[in-house]
Image 1: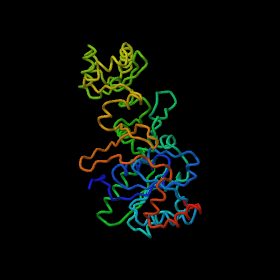
Image 2: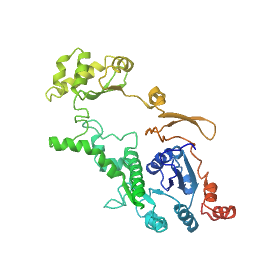
Image 3: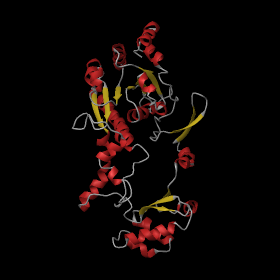
Image 4: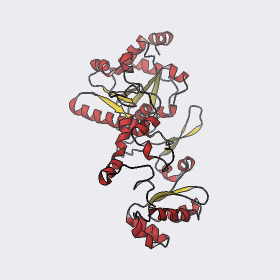
Length: 382
């Protein structure tokens, strides 16, 4: 039998919405877990159904404000390994689908909650979005130009790196622990905690220098010419990351300026060298610099736009840009699976289900009759 991935045989019930939870369960589904995404029909009416994250999953509708809907969920939970939710703290308790309730029926359950600020602490009830978690954790203060407003990243760092990926790691750790102890456990993931964890290196620099880092003014953020971005003559940008002196030396030799090699981190000369390189990079186009520097082994890269990335042979060969057919037979591009396992590789097996598409099939698998299922639809339980 073909192996479906490292998590084959693991069943996940995903009550989460938006990005963090569904991204987490997509990781699990890509690596073989059976993921059943559960949402109420009201969410579809709000126009917030982000279907691209539902590949490899089943999708059902369930009304957890309906007693029958709750009972259906608990029956599904009896045979689940993992439950994932992303409501505000306290909501699952009010709905009757919280960890303690499920644990009484299924002691081996692994129950993961993703929230903005965690299940405990003074901010547990505060609403927020990615920009709020970034700002409270101090990361946003390090993004942007010196003396200008902080820049909100164009990707959801807190949702994905702070929430989804930490949740996936927590679930895998808990599954491993369960294999040894036979016990499930509760996982409390705060997106803000996760983002604060990204400050390990800035905190190290503080411990070394005694100075807290500032935006665009650190070793790895624009302070020195060797680690900076520069505009080209056609309005594009390139990035230089020559932190090690050997890379910087090679670049200086390319410019016929070996005199700059020992001045790499000279505080008295850094502004002058940055200004010099700004003028240098303005003398040629983006394509010219790509041609001359890409293979020079100096930690250089062009700043590419998303269209260029999706068309790049690198990501196509690495299967990080993959194509599939949608429900209407149209070809679509998707982001692939970044974790490459050679023995139990992840895979994109099925396209995203439509909203509630698998409701009847999952309920039938759970043991409900056709008459009971029709009644659930009539009564608004699903």
